[in-house]
Length: 107
Image 1 (cartoon, rainbow, N blue to C red):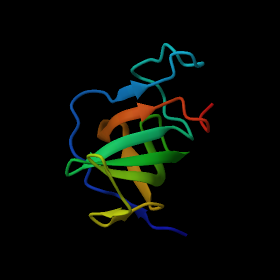
Image 2: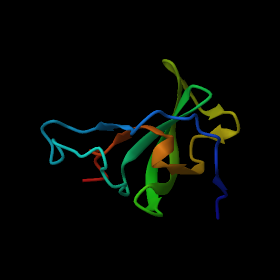
Image 3: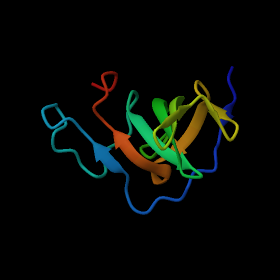
């Protein structure tokens, strides 16, 4: 069983940016869109973007998921600040910079 990491996410102002396909089923999403398995949440740690594929929804605003991307500007990283691609992390809606609700898995 993997350890669930709890990074110190950067503080975000307001609700996350909701990303949706304007031609898809969620073309008019709510700012209070519930978390669902398969969505991709992006939070930041010291300004570095960490993309998490949500896999276990704990509440409407809390989830766990696998890190699928780490980006420092245009540079993709495998490891940053003790986090690595494939790690399972805990993330809350208040920690999210953006939430992609139209990923293939989430449909």
